[in-house]
Image (cartoon, rainbow, N blue to C red):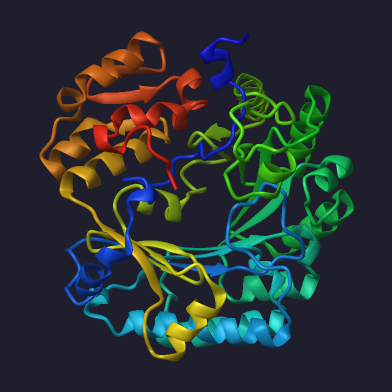
Amino acid sequence: MPTAEATQEKTGLGNYFVANYPPFSFWKPDFLPQAQQALDNPPKPGTPLGLYLHIPFCRKRCKFCYFRVYTDKNARDVENYLEALVKEVDLYSRRPIVGDRPLHFVYFGGGTPSYLSANQLRGLVERLKAAIPWDGAEEVTFECEPGTLQQHKVDAMKDLGVTRLSLGIENFNDQILEANGRAHLSEEIYRAYGWIQDAGFDQVNIDLIAGMVGETWDNWRDCIRKTVELNPNSVTIYQMELPFNTTFSKELNLVGQDEPSSAVADWPTKRAWVNYAFDELGKNGYHVSSAYTLVKGPKRCRFVYRDSLWHGADMFGTGVASFGHVNGFHAQNVDAWERYLALLDQGELPLGRALPVQPRHMMIRELILQLKTGVVEVDYFRVKFGVDVLKEFAGSFRKLAEEEFLTLTDGVVEMSRKGLLQVDRLLPEFFEVQHRGTRYT
C-alpha cells in the first residue's frame, strides 16, 4: 500500500493551479446585487484597469482543457457572440467604476482567439475600441494556436497593436500532441513561427506543458532544445493537472475514484522536467520571472497583465464564463452560451456569481500570487495594507523556511527553486481556515 504522502505526489483529480483567492467555490449568485452596486462607485485612486476578452472557439477540445470552449459553432454563431462581447464591453464603459482611467492592459484569451479570421479581428477591435479606447495600453496580449494562423492574420494582429503574441505550442512531438487532443502538429508550429518572427512583435511567448500524456525524459529534453532554437522572448511552462471537467478525467475513469492517475506523470517528475527546462534555458540567457515563466531581458520583456493583477488591478472579465475583479468584488459571468447572449440582448451584464473581497482577503490574495514570482517585498504589504506579513504569517513562513522552500532576509521573502517548482501546493498554507480543504472551483 502506498503511503498517503506518496499518493498525494501522484496526479489526481482536481485543480492544482491557484489563480485567485478566496477559492472560486465561495463565489455565489447571492452577492450579485452588491457586485452591481460596486460598478456604480468611482474607482479607488491609483488602481489600474484592464480588459480580458474570452474568445471561446476552438478547432478541437484538448483532452486536458477545463475552460468554457466550443468546437461546434458556425459563422453566424461566431458573429452573434462577437456582437454580444462588444455589447458587454460597452455596458462596462458606461459605468462609474471606469472613471477617467485608460486601459492599462488588454488580454485576448480562450479558447482560441486566433480562431477568428483577420476580417473578424479587425471588425471586433474597431468596435471594442469605440467603446473603450486602448491606444495607450502598455500591453495587448493575444493567444494563438499554431494551426489557426496564416501570414495575413499574423500581420493583422501586428497592425491592430498586439504587443505580445503567445503561441500555444505545448509540445513538439506529433504523437503526444495527438494523444492529448491538440489540434495542431509540429509542421504548423514552424510555419506559424516564421510568420510571427517576420511580423516583428515586441514580445513573442511560447507555452509548453510538462507532463502531457505520453511525455518522456528524452522527448522533454528534445522539446527544450527546440525551444532554445526558436529563441522566443519568453517561455511559459505549466505542469499538467487533471481538473474535474476534462475529457481526460472521464477517459481515465477518475471521476468518483479515489486512486490518482498513472497516465500522467507524478508531481516530482513534472517538477524535475520544469527544473531541467529552467536550467537549460538559463544557460541560454533566460531569467526566471515566475514559477511558470522565463524571459530574455527582464527589463524589456514584461508581463503587464500578470503583474498588474497580482498587485490588485481591476479587470473587466468579458465573455462567457469569464472571471474578473472590480472595486473589491470578484465576479464570473454566466457559463451557458444561450444565457450569456440573452442577458446582453436585454442590455444586462451577464454576471453569474460574485464574492465581496474583504481587505484581509485582498492582502492574502496579493501575497500568494506574488509568491509565484519568487520574491515578496514585505514593505509593499506594510504600505498598502498596514500589515507586517512576516509577523502575520510567522508560523507559515517559518515552516516553509525550515523545509527549504523559501528564505527570509532583510524584509524580502525569496522562494527557493525547490519552493517555486511546487508553489501552488504550498499556497494554501496562507489561506484562512474556512478556505482550506474545500473544492477550489
